[in-house]
Image 1 (cartoon, rainbow, N blue to C red):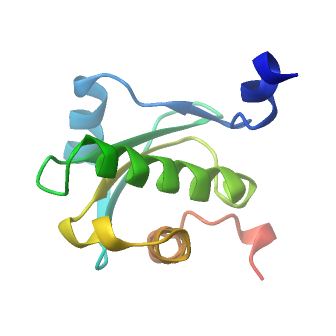
Image 2: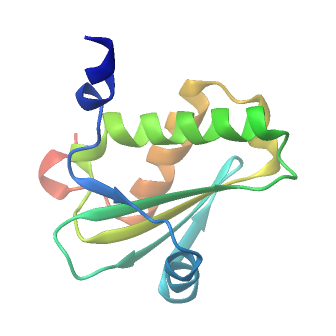
Length: 126
């Protein structure tokens, strides 16, 4: 069972932003919103899938801290993935204060920004 563990928790509706040029395009043409822990940029990508990119600067902490924050953001997104509109490029940037955050704080910050941005699916809002 262990070799197939990664197949169980994969994001269904989302791909990754990987190239620097993809991030730069989202920064240039997207809308941005920020709160205490995260900054989010979104722009339409013309497909039926979302693409998520997470960026954490070295100013936030060492590699262990940066990777932990990336995992928290990715898991927060994955658990609420079905709530977001499709066809978006989403770049999430962690701010300096986010190194001391727990999962609930990151999740709350991400959902707050997505609500501000208007990217929550209208049919699934509560």
